[in-house]
Amino acid sequence: MRFPEPILSMLKAKGIVQPTTILVQGLPVILSGRDMIGIAFTGSGKTLGPFGLIICPSRELARQTYEVIEQFLTPLKEAGYPKLRPLLCIGGVDMRSQLEIVKKGVHIVVDTLGRLKDMLAKKKMNLDNCRYLTLDEADRLVDLGFEDDIREVFDHFKAQRQTLLFSATMPKKIQNFARSAFVKPIIVNVRCAGAVNLDVIQEVEYVNQEAKIVYLLECLQKTPLPLLIFCENKADVDDIHEYLLLKGVKVVAIHGGKDQEEREYAISAFKAGKKDVLVATDVASKGLDFPDIQHVINYDMPAEIENYVHQIGRTGRCGKTGIAITFINKNQSETSLLDFKHLLQEAKQRIPPFLAELNDPMEDNEVITDISGVKGCAFCGGFGDRIRDCPKLEHQESMVIANNRNDYFGSGGYRGEI
Image 1 (tube, rainbow, N blue to C red):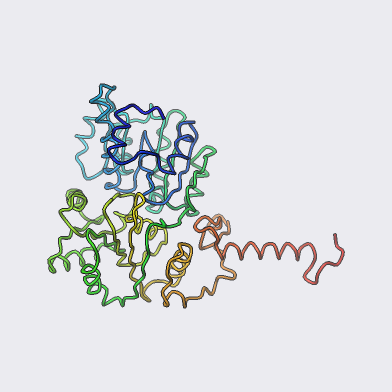
Image 2 (tube, one colour):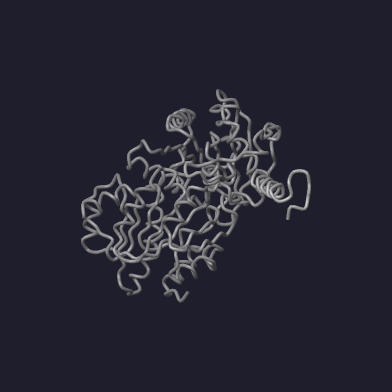
């Protein structure tokens, strides 16, 4: 790579003596100038790859990425290399302080879409000289409805750009977006898209809805700290936060309804070890790196299986082993539970009796049709991406073959039509 010595020293100090698999395969593609879609499980080192304009789905992930960049730029500056100015461009922070940096000229911008769009619309910043764009945790950006906003940012580029997309999952909507937004992209798929990190041991507990918060306290007493707890909605986060505070637990909470100061304090205090438990919505599930987390508890089974993949990916990072405990009950939709069952099967995890008893009534013929009329498998999106051997997709393909045979030979066997 011919990295400068200060960069190599910083990598060594972080314990990185050889590139991760996604970097080994992705960096040659990036340096060749091609558009790229990088798919790798969470905690695989994707953040070390991107540069240029970096768009993140959450302020917390943007700040984390910005801090990684700063860590590498500081030793370069100290060694006498030309100064590179990074900018953290996120909401919840006074725009004037960001504009002061913009006036001096910036080389690397890490941002969330809201603040970036605001600055571009007010002509406080332009992308005339920008040649590189990275979409980090792109599935989450599209999930949040930012697809049109991303396209709006594309319109501000004045010259050819190289676009990179990084994600742990590759649902159908991301595939459709990539087709229209990229120029003949190279797909670097380190592992099956949407597959969970196999360094995470997945445990499932059947817990009645009214007993969940009490059982959660029991889990805390037998689980090593620090610990992450994920909930589907803000009200549950606040309830659990208050309940654990009353029980004497050192806990902080984060969700989209809290102001920026509270969010930053929660993340920094948890990372610094001042707090033992972080309760969060999935705002903390995408890309955030908590190196010492051994356990994650999913208080709710996420409605979207992709969110589950991201949430349990907060543990078992960088080759370490982690444990994820998920509470389920009959409040979850059968579709979510069936997807969960298939995911556990793919990862060769223990299937609890409650899930094992579930049979998919649609498995023989389930096909979904999107607005464009394209048919695909409801489980893997029709492309077999989420797992290596999608039972629904295989069955659909076998049905197509059977129908083709009928077209050629008739349902009563070969009668000499050809």
